[in-house]
Image (cartoon, rainbow, N blue to C red; front, side):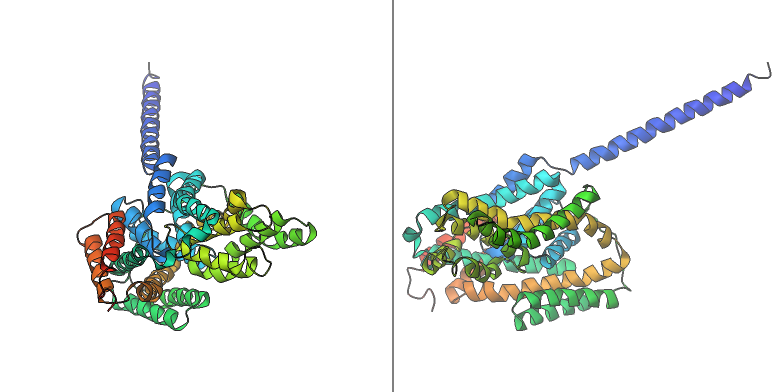
Length: 437
């Protein structure tokens, strides 16, 4: 009789343990559901980036503005600091910065397949257009003089100005970071090269690490956690350097134009910092002296590339299409396209998993505050050159530009509609003699 209380106590313990396990399971299930709810489908990623690939005119700096408007302000996939951290990382890495930002967002939203969908959606429209340009290059020789194309450049001014406006309010709220941003802009304007950009970002990080440590250090709200095995990341970095060092040896050993072609475009994507127009001299040196593409065809393709949305690196698809020795045509275009973007995939898979851990350390956060301010300075410098100097040529252009900025910033008009407005307005104004007076 005296033994009855002991089993009852044991039963209560078992019941309590069972309830705790059930509650723990429910909490884990809810957490998993929340994590799944933050992830999107591949079709969603492909659809959104395909629309951006069809409407994102203005070059890599404008692309960052389009991405920010879409994924930070509208869809809230990322918060401002997380987006700025991605931009900072991609500015440090060689390759097309805006495409790398898009690939990174795809990875964070839907894993590695999401990265492929983001790249495919953003790059396919311009790649297809450039391949078609390659088949009919002579028909588009005067495209660079089109009034509607100039209107797209004006819209790019408004897009970049909106990006600078929004990012400065969030990332440069005090005089210290505003000073870093202005200093970075001055440095980049004084040293207009990839080394100037890297130096400005590095200086911003050092200043932030040394002088911004006393301020508040909030934990990043947006997650950059990439759930990939670390062995995959290490393998991606090993593959990046193995191809960079091994392809020239293989090209010299095996007399194959396909290998030589892949080697040249892989090195262009792996070694160029700043992306965009910076890669053009490198590509010209790779294909013109060897006689693969004549200089007239190269320049005609460059003019056509200004008329299409999406990344300028899809210019490689055009070069592969007009290539003299085989493979050429659409197959050569696809080979060059894959080769020039492959380094970006390998570097991002190798760097992103470690980047999230580093960015959460207090010292790294302080440095990133300085880096983010410097990134705003880079965008500010780019707003002047080449965006403003290439797009605003007179009072009429300025009027279209400020109206486009008004529509984007205060009326929240979708960017693709503003793109159409800019093209139509510039075409109409071109008919008046005071258009550039």
